[in-house]
Length: 106
Image 1 (cartoon, rainbow, N blue to C red):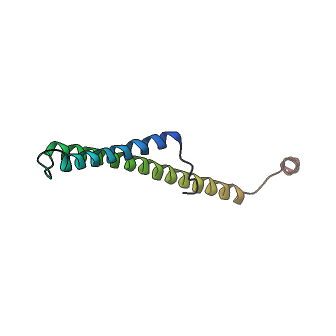
Image 2 (cartoon, rainbow, N blue to C red):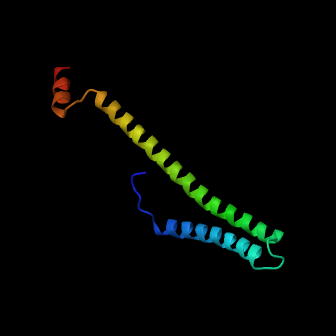
Image 3 (cartoon, rainbow, N blue to C red):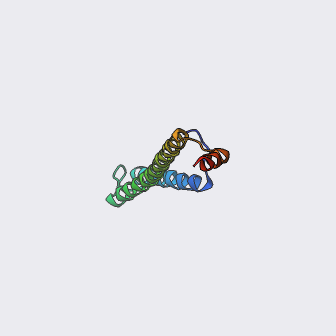
């Protein structure tokens, strides 16, 4: 990817994904070290961590998927335009003067 410019929407998406992931890890750490019984993480906290990791993965995955699809579309469009240009370049070129002369000879 040549353009490393990140749009505002993408900044928000990635920020929310990272925040969700860090929030899930913080809940596990608090549950493991600060809540009785020490060292035991409640299953609901593990569920929240799983949800947050899935959420972050979904945001990154969808963004990467559509970036990839866009690049694929751009490549196909460029190739098609080049093919059409080559096809037009191979056709004989006619000028108005030549066409008029040919009509006069008939």
